[in-house]
Structures are given as structure tokens and as C-alpha cells.
Image (cartoon, rainbow, N blue to C red; front, side, top):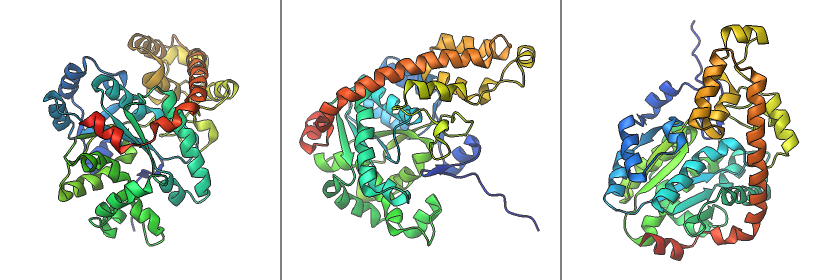
Length: 383
């Protein structure tokens, strides 16, 4: 008797095993971000962010529609977020960085949702007080990245429940338990909060349209693992009279231990937290998984394998210009560069970034309340 092959886990709450992007694109019904589409975006924005040029953001839903709205001069808003189950690490920054780029290029307002309710419901070891505390700490990391305080609106699900819950009910009434089970893999043992939660995550995608009394286009940059929430939202929102949000999806940043997605739940050594001391960050990078060979001699002879290397992944996503990246890859494949060379170079760049970010985060504390959601301010920037 043949045993069924279990698919690798790939949900908003867990990624395990190697990520088969081709399979996920097919199963999720996604479209590749083509060179033609990037060219259109580049003309509108007068350039592209490296994470777009390097196809780190690689799939989409309805991006051509959103670009046509921008080209016609129509205002739009951005939406992204964070589930505060831990301190912020570098992997969390990928959608935030591209969201910030869109905000700067198009002066678009951003709704940033902190789903503290989600993490309380899905993480058995986290108290509600703890996730609320983590949400506020994560918010400081967002501010430290340099988002425009006049265009950025923080929503905390528990703090802003009076605003979110009535709209979430409208979503929930249109979503069946069978849909939630099929999309997220929930079962009879899942608590009833988990079954309801996706309704809360859908609300920011149409909340500005509710506030202004007219449809406002929305763009959501996100990690690919978050797409299931918005498959449901995109199915329901037209039935309520709202636009479907356009979506862009990024690939996952590899973990330092070689995991397919950086995750502190696997090991604290798998991630670089933004609060890591410089000494801890240096140690983690020195011990990171690489694409190196068994010995230095073999690597000089056969060359390295940057395609599987977590260190090279960091250069791709954050810490190398196009010229630097080309040199690193070429020298690695030719055996002219050893893993220690790359680690030393990355350590220098990471420590500089962390030092600057941690100082900016301290300064962010006095600004936090300025970012809290205001319907009146949102209405002004979208009117």
C-alpha cells in the first residue's frame, strides 16, 4: 500500500521543509511579476527598489490594475503588518522595506496592522499581556526604519477593536468554516478564535474605503506565506461592494542555520534580531550555514554554492549593491573567495546596520503615539 506524501507545511503560522515556489505559485493561483510589469512600475516610480529588480518580490495579484490606477492619478493606500510573537528580526523587514519605498515614491498612506490577537490565539505559550508588549516593541522597529509619521497609521487589533470588529463581522458572515479549514488547514481541535481571525486581517484592506465612503485602491506587500488570508479577503470584498486589494509577494529569507525560512521558533541562532547585541550578531554569522565545500582546498578547486548559502542570501536581500553582489557571486563560484571572507564582509555591514537601527529605535519611543490610527488624518491624506 502506497503512503500519501505529506506536503511541506506552508501557512501564515509555519513554514517547514524546502519551499517549492513553483508548486505554491500553481496552488495559490499567483502570477509572476514580469519584466514588462516591472518596466511599467519603474516608469511610474522613476526607478525600482533592488528587492524588485532582484525578483525577491516575484509574484502578484492584480498589480497591473493597481498600476493603471496610479497612472491615472488615482490615490491609493498601502497595507502591511506584523504578528508580534517575538522580537523583530531581519526577515520581517523585507515587506516593510518595499512598503516604505512605495510610500516614498507615491506619497501613499500606509495602514500597518499589529495582529496581537492572532498571536495570542495561535501561540499557546504567549499571554495577552506579552503579545501586547511585543506589539509595541515591534512598532518601535517600524518607526526606526523611517516611515513618514504623517502618512503611517498603526492599528493594534486589541487596542482598536472598536474600529475593526464591526467590519470584521461583515467579512466573517461571508466565510464558511469549510473555507477556513481548506485554506489554513484548521480542524475540529482549532480554537474558535483561530477560525475567526482571518476576518480581522482583512479589515485594513477596505477600512479607508469605509471611512471615506468610496472605494480606494489598496496594495499589500507581504511575505508569500501570508497570501492565504488575502485569497479569502479578495473573494469576499467584491460581494460587500469593495475593491479587491492588489498584492505583491516576497520570497522567504533563509535562516542562518540553513532553514528555508528564518524563524526563531526553530532556533534563536536561526535569526538576527534587531535587538541582538553586536557580539551576539557576530557570533551567529560566524556559525551560519554556507554553501562552502568540505575544505578550503576543495572550495578553491570546485567553487562555492551561493544558491544554498544563507550568507549570500543576506547580501541579495539587504547588504550588497548590484556591483558587490556580482563580484561576490563570481568569486564564490570560481573558488576565489572562501566562506570566511563573506562572513567577515557581512559582519561588518550587519553590525553597522544594527548599531544605527538600535539608536533610531531609542529615539522612536517618543514618537510612538503619533503613529496611532486616526480616521480624521487618514481622510485628509486620501481626500
